Image (spheres, rainbow, N blue to C red):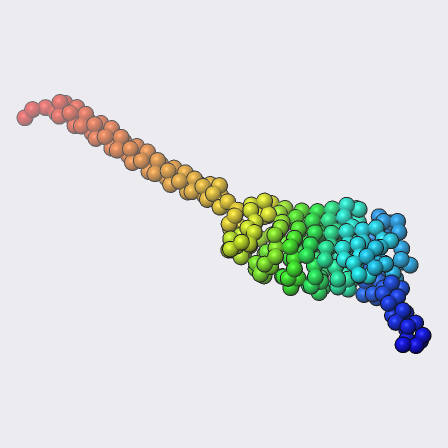
Length: 268
């Protein structure tokens, strides 16, 4: 092997450490731009650092963990971030954990997150996210954790989430969700984890196992009907009794009047 080939091979081995994946750069650039005020981001989140966020398994960016030169974990929680979740996060195709919890993020959960096929942890809790939960998230087949509690999400819980065989933690409590809880989540078979009441509480229009039935509401309706029927029956009895008493008194008066008349009439 000549010197030229050796140098070429040496150069090829250095390329991953010199160049970063352009998809990761786009991911971070658009994420930064989707925020209303990026000053709350860690101090080293500068655009010039997005071109090479990873150096093999390390990163100079706070909240970023890399593996083999690609972004592996992105954690920007509890930073009072305002804005929206960038759909370009889907460019971080090696991402396995995304944590944007405890911020002030608004708008909807991007449908494009379905492209994160390696995603195992999704934590978007304690924000102000609105709209429906995208059923397309079920395409992220490796999801172990979905945490969306304390948002403003509406609509049903996607039935497709029951297909996530690796799902071990699920929390959508304290939203505005409605409709039935999918049996594929609440009553899972085999060794699949089952999710208890705490995963679903705080959604007044959500119903089904494991939430308790609307007993109070049912009893109140029955009570109202019972009170109505009871009041009607009591009124009917009182009215009937009053009529009977009135007839009795009238009859007695007539008898007395007849007695008086017969007593005053002269005998012929």
